[in-house]
Length: 454
Image (cartoon, rainbow, N blue to C red; front, side, top):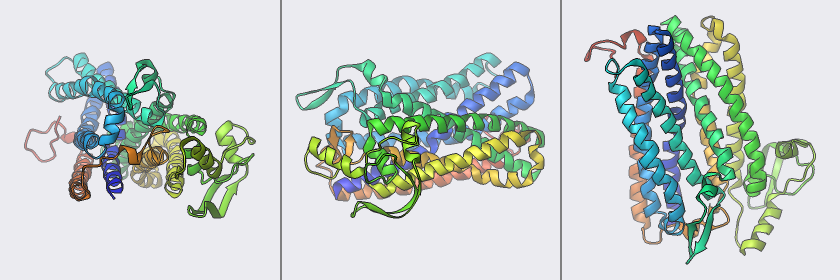
């Protein structure tokens, strides 16, 4: 019971936290680009754009920080076995993230907020670029830590504990080299669709046409580039995972039996107990193409992979939850393909976007597509590794704390979910309120209706 509750608690806090992270990573870059245009041109419109989107970034950033702090405490409490076993390795990149990246990020975001009209234009611009770089540098170190869980490298087992012996191997982990570009481009995509969605709402209402038309153009350009990157990098990352974590990719495809060529299952009824599918809709050879860029090529099935794992590690169930991975993958890919279509149309329509009323109706809803894709992708990354906490090295049962009672986990789980739900409601309310404001109110005196933070 304790392990199930600990997993639910960490899954809940991680999912809430990851709603905020991609928007922070992507939106801050776009704010920095827009402010750069202001410094280059001196056009006050770009200054107002920087302040408008910067306010929304600050709201999201604050929520991301609050929801992220709790996760590190869980490593020492609910997952103390994991912390004892790999803490010497896992703790190093997290310490660098906190002492270097987050320190820079939190320092210069304060200077940026209060530095308008107090710093020179270039000095002030430098602050937001430092925030943008440090925010993504935080993601670098966190993903280095996570990549060790996915593909442990640079370690040796000394006195029953994993110890780091090769730091360069840790930071050049092949899994990280695919994972970070995928997360970075997903963040940029999230920021771009956020800007397009909010801008489309204003354009449909006919308010501040020039301001939001320009904003939409920036979002459309960034969104098209980002979605091409995220789909392309995701394809190559999938091919890497076929070699590195074949069980994960087989689960994502509900691929039970080894075959050559391997068909892609579009939809299926999944019988995990019977280890088979029913009512399948397939595309012949597509899974082989996705795995090897060829319509022929052997893709190992879950049943053979389970037998290999038992031969290597002993009796046990090494198959991850297939239905969760199967549908998470389809949510991610489906949302990604839809974003690709919408980003292409946005790029085509951007010159006369204010006249495309039907498209403007769709884009505020499409703002949520990156969130679906991000959540589906993160579910696949974590659930697909089960039952391993550290792949091929430590199981969930070995990593969970044995001294924290189930009652304590239940109480903290309920409390965290309630608090995080309230924070989510507050975040959505504040973002919606800020997004509805007219940019003409940006310089309203303090205390006046419609005034914003910066």
